[in-house]
Image (cartoon, rainbow over the protein chains, first blue to last red):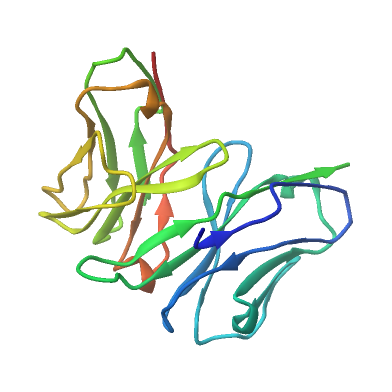
Length: 118
Length: 114
């Protein structure tokens, strides 16, 4: 089973629409971290947010907001009033403690490609 | 700060050739890592290092070697390139172990193995 599932492979919306990208994760640990990264067509990976497992407060940053729900193991990302510049692949990722020796490792979902049509 | 830099940006190899992908960071980060990105697969961890002289394997380490002689540099070596290693490679770094800090990524190296 995937540790991070982004069920939406591709989404297309018209500019100014709101869009929510889903992320469901799986972990046995009580301490873990969740991330969202953006990969625009130019290819670089841009950090958007980090959230630890003890902080379930929703977060808003401009047009971006994140809804973290431990009860459903979800960390969804909403873009309000989407713009063409939001077109990118968005990755959700999970970091959890190692099972044995070693360090935390970041596990990525397969990504959701968002296309915003003008 | 230049952040995380990677060279080269593009590379074409023939099967069996060897090469080293370079990664450097100037942020005094302890943790560095290498990922590969394949279509529809997301990013998968190849190797990582929690400090100079310490490296460990990630999810897909076969065919790759790493070493960490300095805090700044973390090269990735392909000993005998195979077509299955055609991918985009990203290097990342963070101040401490990844769970406590955000990883910042380099611009990537696009590798094609013929």
